[in-house]
Image (tube, rainbow, N blue to C red; front, side):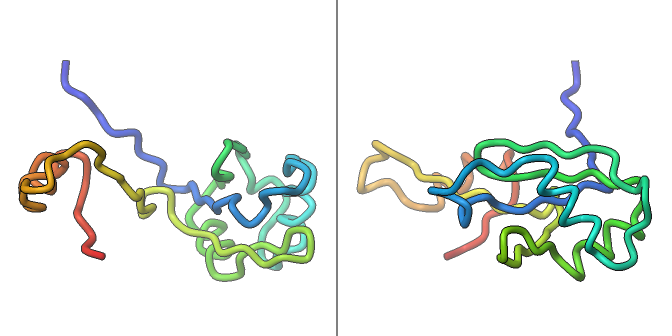
Length: 119
């Protein structure tokens, strides 16, 4: 069976790291913040998914998505940047690899999972 990647063309997300140490964000707070974004019409939000590390918002169309990406969100007196779900970057820590192993070997092994962004 061929593995297919989940496509989420109208989904965006923001990281929750700035909200650590505070009460957990609620859907109501996010909806309230979305209602303050000019240009977003009622009913353009299809789903909100809050995980431990991020919040994913799925919108009905690409116009609403671009509007949200440009303006961002203001939640709890804090401005959060919005980015594409497909464009997210994941930092990977490789443990227990021998010191003598070349970085290129590790990069090559991880290539099937995405692009390598040098630090």
